[in-house]
Length: 166
Image (tube, rainbow, N blue to C red; front, side, top):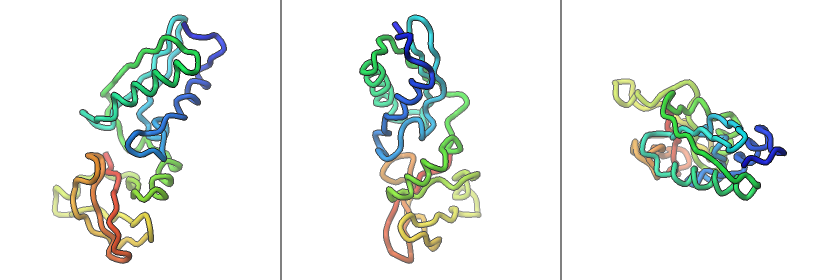
């Protein structure tokens, strides 16, 4: 049963406490995977969208949502996993992008997609999260996780992950 004292706003606040298991400096709400919170008399329904099909963190997202809401006194939680519309980095806010940069991960470049490598335009210009130089090179489309690419700064010589635009 849903405790009548819990509001949709409070549940959003509870969910905003859950860190992304792969990037603990941002939360699952900042990442944009939590799409909707619905309250009914008998349960809370949380709608989430994976960052990409097959994302290994989704099970952890579900488990942490249920655990957190149970700890807050919400007994019955249903997770609704939706794939459409597909998740996009456009759902990440400026605060989350800045948290990524400070953590050492170059945030996704707004308003772009990572299709340039497939065409003659080549990879996009990504600023180094450490020294902010744009003199960087793509080393690999595959970084520490599938949602990141590996770049290297030619100014400070540091390698860094870039959170790919989707």
